[in-house]
Image (cartoon, rainbow over all chains, first blue to last red; front, side, top):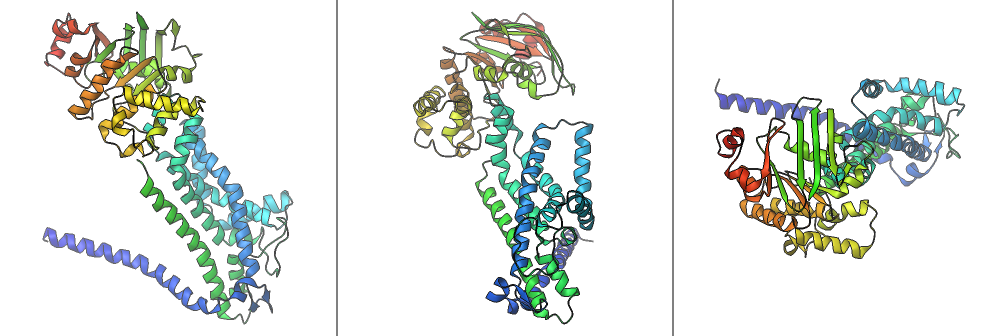
Length: 281
Length: 251
């Protein structure tokens, strides 16, 4: 076969495959948008559910997901970034470090429902936090940590080694070098990783199922020891557990969750592209 | 007058690349001492001993002493931070830090705790003038240093090491990536600087070595083959291996 012909065939094939991967994503988004947007109203967003969730709004679930995301960030972001700094800047290449890395990789591969069970055992029962925002946030944090650690570590490693050498040669300590050069330069990458990690946490159902999610709680949680409604779990409930549920409300809820998650994704994309434009290396 | 006295210095890296074997050398104050020879001879390794930058590398074994003003800087108890403020370094590839020209110059001083605006201001102007780049950048000090050309960046790097008023300046092939005009500017700056500083230069060519050297040391595979007055060493080398290298028979 002619070389040009085979090249064109190859490219066409790759284009086709690319289109095949994009089509389902776009159609899901468009479909949910079309089905869900009629449900969106002031009341739907800002009222509590009524009549066995068949009427009213999803305000407690929106706020609940917001709280859980913030709670997850509070625990997982400082810990994750600290771990990434350690692994990238301080950890020697030895058996101990390799075990830590192995643990992180394995942590990323554990099914989310297993995190849920673990959270139930440790936070809800053993530490007696009860089914609460606190327990759910901690459970989501553990699930999010591997994502934050590995993306942050990668972002820090991407900062050129020569900056570190120069900084040290000018009389900087290791920590000064990290504080003034490595962290600021790696920050956009770290933020991207953090947002992607939190986005995953915001959309998860299984980890909060046993640890903090309320089936029906038509008020806002009063403290971190209260259970809360949350968008993904609410969606599960109204889609499978409530008979004669208006389909509009289901898709409306799905749409709100999707916008929440895609919105975070958009922020991450903006941060990344802005940083790339301003990068000085 | 000797600024540095190197005694029986031997070093080996863990990965087996480059090494130094039993180097003995006195390095004069207010002069340019050139370390030259083919790649892998140990020149950079020696430079990195003098500001203890080798601490960041995997050094397998090291023995001997480097006396600076009577104190052994290889002593583990040496304050490396203070040492590196006294021993500035310029690298082969110009590495400006990702910040403005001004911030690049004040970086070291600010780390050392200098907060007085007037002091910082004074250091910026003085060091830029010494590095012969003041006229080119004085109106754009707030711009990112990366926007400058390679030759300008390298002089910024030289100025940056001068800003801390070091006593010794180490230059590791500082002009290897520069055009002849920029190279000329850097070399001219060095000739001025040696009045006040001790300069140790790894040149990027034998020609540059011959042009700049007050004293020259020929390194071959970790060994100091010959060391002496620059003019004599390049016109009338004592060792056959030096002559072969200087005349271009190998290397």
